[in-house]
Length: 244
View 1 (tube, one colour):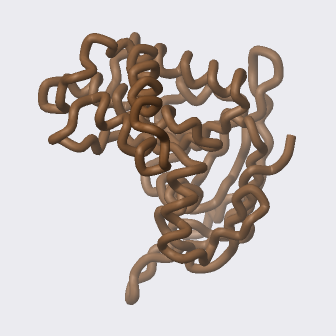
View 2 (view 1 turned 60 degrees about the vertical axis):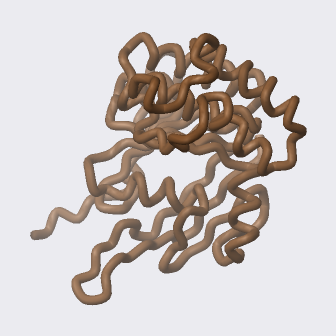
């Protein structure tokens, strides 16, 4: 497999006075077709790292490479193009457009990417049906439950066939049945289409369904767990600073 993402010495610091180090020299390689989870306590830098990978924020220092291209300092328009063509996003809160129906919300990124309207609609319907929402195509977000809206958001992220799907607590608002449905679809696409999935989660049951688990603490990747058979083997990557 080839590297789809390579991160070098990534550092992100917030604040002008009292600085907060969100990422502290992260090195990371993600291969094409990986299915991995990022875990760690609140404030460990998980979402910051995801925002960097998703080109939603810029680092204080370091580099981010996507498919062999350095995307660290690309301009606003190029960042938008990369996000639309290469990346699919699902956040804990669905961020659907309230004035549009479920199918229209899913169609939106496809239309922006230049997909024909008929094809965009057909593709959107297909993914909504896979999410168990075939009878809710015309419903607006206010006419859907929180879990249904989240499944619409998952369909929206997947419909454009992105190379990389980024999920930040994407099953956090789903019941166990819906969560399993979403996971099964993600895994199916991962295997059949070689899509790369990067999932931030507090749910270790969900994390342990992936093939690699990275643990962040204080802005550093401190360990990784690699699947071997039905279990995982843990590798420590750095020592935590135990000083007060």
